[in-house]
Length: 342
Image (cartoon, rainbow, N blue to C red; front, side, top):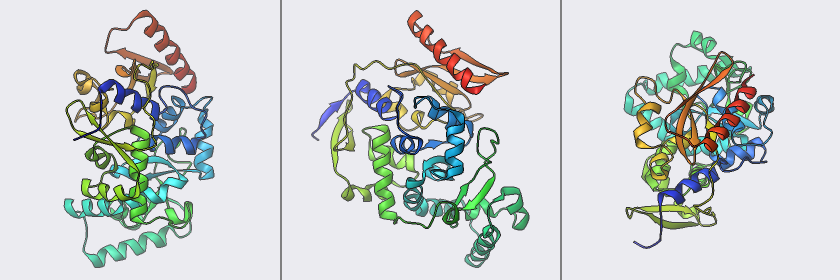
C-alpha cells in the first residue's frame, strides 16, 4: 500500500480545522452546517452551543430564525438520529440513508405487513396534509406509527419545537411541504454524504464514513466513482481516504480551548484515530446508562474536562491537570458560554 503516513497529531488538527474548532468562522449558518457535516441535536440546545463554539458573533436567535426561515432543517437522518442540516443538504442526505434506514427497521422486526404499512403511510400523509402536528396529536390518530413509518414518509421537526425556548422536538411536518420537493437520487445522496464526511472530519477509513452515515460500507463505497479522492495511511498501515482538494493543516497549529455540546459528532467515530478523546476518559463521556450525557471541553486538541449548565452557571469538571495559561483560557470560554446561556 502506498500513500503518505498521517500521524495522530496530523489527523487531530485536520479534524479540528474542518470542524471549525481551530478558529471561529465567519460562515453563515447553512454553510457552517455543510462544512461540519451537520450537528447532532437530540438535545435541542446542542445545535445552538455547537454553532456558538464554531462561529464568530453567533447569537441564539440566529439559529431560531434560520429554522423558522427554513434555511436549516432538523430531521432524523444519519444513524437514525436527529440532525441539524442545511436545507440544501437535507434531500441528498435523506435520499442517501433512506434504504439503510428501511432495512434496519425490517431487521429489528417492527415493520408491519405491506398492507398495514401502506394504510399507515397514507394515514400519516393525510394527517399532515394541512400542516404540522405534534407527535402526541399524530399518535392519537394511529398509535406507534411515527418510528415505523419515518423511513417511508420523510418528516422534519419544525419550530417552535426543537428550539432553545421549546426544546422538545415534537412538532412534525412533511418534508416535501416544509423543504420542497425531493431533488436528489440515492447515488447523488451517497456522493454528498461521503463528501460531507471527509470535508467535515478529515481523512478516514471507509468504515468510519459508513458508521457516521449509518449505512453499510459497500453502500458508502458506491460514491467512490463520483469523487476525486486521495489516499493516505495511518501509523498502523490502514488506508485512509480524503478529498483530493482538501488541505491538511500544519500539525503544529495550536488548538484553542473549545466547549463542545452534548452529542457533538466530533467525539464519535473519528475520536480514536485523531486522539481527541483519550481512552482513559471515554467511560466518563460515554456509558450505557447515560450516553454522552455531558458537554466536553477540548484543550490542546484533546478532551480535558466536562461541563454542564446548572442554575445559570456553567460548571466545569477538570479531567486533566492544566497549565495556568490553559486554565485562564478555559475560564474565559466558560464565562462566554455562561453569558450565552443567560
